[in-house]
Image (cartoon, rainbow, N blue to C red; front, side):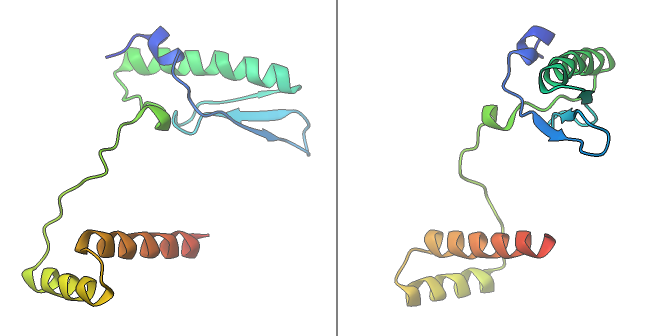
Length: 123
């Protein structure tokens, strides 16, 4: 487990949104759920957000609440194992061979195109 200073040194993404109806700015940290602050000026909003982040992290450490690390700090190998039926394995192999590419490339294409379509449907 990291110390509060180690967490504070991590590059958490900060989202700043102007509030046209009330004035000022709202600041949040997407990777720290519920960590939100406001300020009348951009500078005060950022300063308040840093205080809110420190308080959020301190409370999470004290309560044993899980703390996500920033997306930039996470490590992904680019590999995962997936068990599929033999019939699907055969189909994927045949389709990749028809396309003249490896089965890995074909599966990557299918996953990428379907993931993109799924995200577009959600918007």
